[in-house]
Image (cartoon, rainbow, N blue to C red; front, side, top):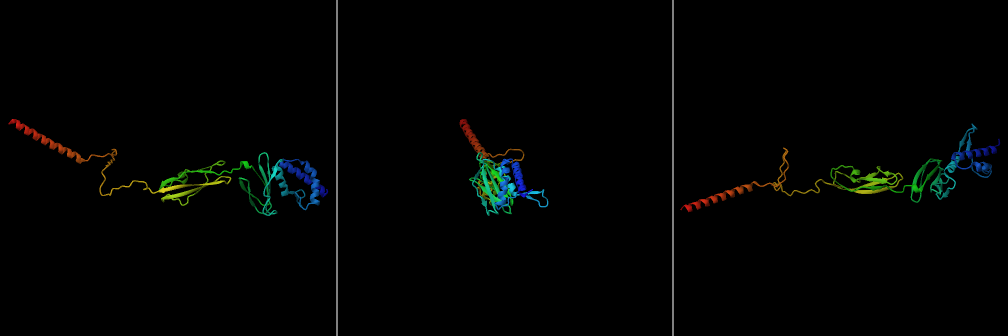
Amino acid sequence: MKTSILSVSCIRALCIDTINKAKSGHPGMALGSAPILYTLFTRHLKADPTLLIQNASDPNEYKITPEAYMMAQFTKYIRPGYVRVESTDSIGDADYGISNVVFKNPNTGKLVMVVVNNSNEEQTFTAAGDNYQFTATIPATNVATYQWNPNDIDVTAPVISGQDATIYVGDNTDVKTLLNLSVVDDKDGEISDYKINLNGYDYQKAGEYTIEIIAQDKTGNSSNASYKITVLNKTEGTVENTNDGNEPDNTDKVAVSNQGNTLSNKKSVKTGDSANLVGMFAILSVALLGIIICLKKKYNH
C-alpha cells in the first residue's frame, strides 16, 4: 500500500477516534478533508503533522502524539456556539513558555481555557478577571483545560467578629475564648483555621496588648481585625485601708464563729453606756429616798 493512501487512512481513523472519544462533532468533514490535509502538510507546510508515531521495530504499535490530545481538549470542552474572548496569548517565550486560548459560553457565562506548557519545566500561572483570580500549575510539555464561571467565584473575604477584653494578671484564658472570636465566610461557612498574632501578649504582666487576627478562605480572600486585651494587677480598682495600723477600727465589729453561728456585721452597743445608766438610776433613787425621809420628820414635829 502506498504511503499516501496509508497516511490518509490513518488521518481518517484518528479523526473518527477523536470525535468518538470527545463525544462531540461529526466525522463527515474529517473523512472528506483527509486527502487535502495530507497534501497540504506533505507538499506545502513546513511542519510535522504526525499525530501517530509508528514503532520502527513493531509496525502494529503506534504512539499518540501530544497534538492528538490537544485536539481532544478542544473538541471535548469547547462546544459549538462558544465564542473566543480576549486573553494573554503567551507568557514568556512563545516557543518555550505558556500559551493559552479562552472561549466563553454565551448562554451561561462559563469560560473554558486551554493552556499549553511549551517548556521542559513545570510552570505556575495566574488567571485573573475583573474581580477574581486563581493560580494553577501545569506540568512540563503538557496541555490542560480549565473551566470556571465568573458568576460563581467567591470574591468576598471572611468576616471576623470579636470583642476587647480585660483580665487580671495570671488569668490564662484561651485568647479565642477571651476575645469571643468568630470567623465566617459566605461560601466556606465557619472558619476555624485562622492566624492569631499575639504581638508580645503576656497574661502574667500588666499592660495593654493588641491582638491581630488574619483569616483566609479557600479561594484566597483574606481579612484582618485587631482587638485589645488589657491585663490589670489584682490590686487595681480596690479601696485602700486608711487606718494607720496602730489602733483597731471598731466602728464595725465582725464576729466569726466556727460552731455554726452566723456572721455578724451589725454595730454593737458599748458596755460603758450600760454602766452610766445604772449609776444615774442609783443616784436618783438615793436622792428620792432622802427627800421622803425629810418630809416624814417635818410632819412628825
